Length: 151
Image 1 (cartoon, rainbow, N blue to C red):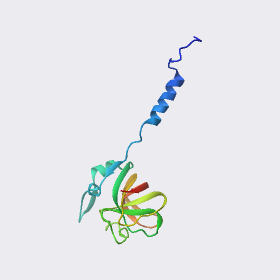
Image 2: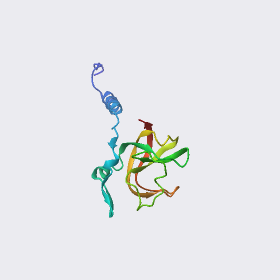
Image 3: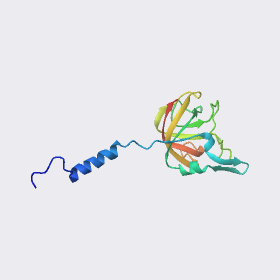
Image 4: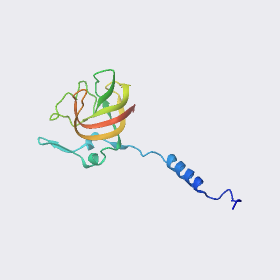
């Protein structure tokens, strides 16, 4: 048994091959979402998140929109809007929450872009009312651990 053929499959070779196969698999791509798919319904009785958004809770998503005017030139969060805005859209109460904005929490403090620049944001989707402990801002939908790029 001392003369094993070099092509013979051993546990070590199998283990190394399995690890390399797992590492070489591409990461799962983020799901694209759009502002018009965030909610199932909204009106005088409130709003209801869409089934797809609820199903994507906790998963990586990408959403395209515009950065609302920030409070500071560099920040760890901003608001993404469907259309470019000239005023702060997130200074509302939970009841007045606009349905066409999403709060973005960045991985790290990042210089922000002008309000008219279209961007694509990718990160983990959070759904449900939440109040930021530092700023006191209320949000219904958030993308956290996010990064963005101009499109």
